[in-house]
Length: 110
Figure 1: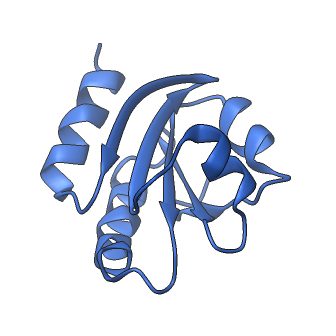
Figure 2: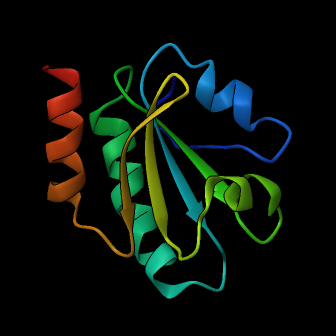
């Protein structure tokens, strides 16, 4: 893991998320979404800060509509934090780095 968010699609989602050896934050986003673009540098920074502890996976909802629909994503950006196949936290809308990091820290240091 190089500390960068990785991309998943409808076909690779299960492998990238549910089978990961560490918790995974999934960012459901779209190119036309302003808040999604604003969140991107925050997620890149978090990926570096939590490298090896939490993986960040990005899913473009326009190019890959199946998985977001199955997960009930109704607004973006939507951030879903998984531990294996278990959803442990979710945010919808723009989030601060501090609010995401606080949940990451609770998960890592529990």
